[in-house]
Image (cartoon, rainbow, N blue to C red; front, side, top):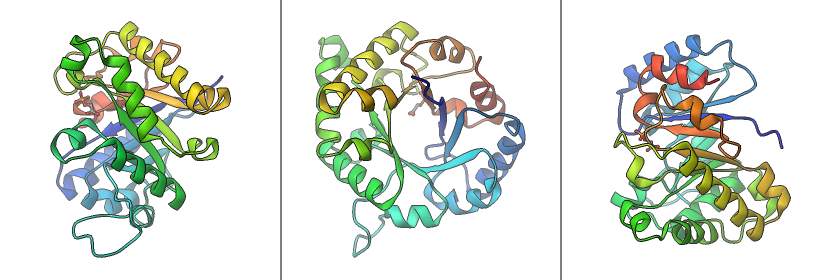
Length: 251
Ligand code: PGA
């Protein structure tokens, strides 16, 4: 199955609006000749719309870092899928480990956000991954299994056309400890197998599974050489145009 590679940059809580706009403009120039792979950036909410103006018509897609599961209402501080679409987003991240760790995100809220986003027309990058204690206790696969079965509960194969999975072992995020390409490949194979059980072979073969956690210019080529790694979700190394564009240009 030929899956289009997807390289996503998660800017987390970095960059003011002018900084985000300037970075997007430089990135647009640096990757303008790239085709045949999908490039996605996820700036903070307030920079989404101004960045969308900068990248309009380019090969870069816009993504938010979170979303809420209602269309509108008295939910102070929240942002709906429709608002994100109106700001120029095509994607949203859902269930990033930092949201799970610090902001009470659960598999249930991941599920609600995922359904509503897809129904409203957004594509989603659903993040899953085990913590260090879970890996050390031999629970990696059971944690992934629950995150998949609960997070994607009630979705149909048609919904799944709008889903990308990001496997991010929590112990590898921002720590400089990357999973080896072989460790990542093993988890990706497991995830694809679970998706086949929960949905069908077509869904499992079509879906893109990204790896995330200390992806850098010096490990990208090795990661992308694995059969079941269809792209990466990059934090720290996406903040600088040099390193992110090198990652986008993996060989
Ligand atoms: P990192 O972050 O690349 O800085 O490890 C990855 C992520 O949190 O998506």
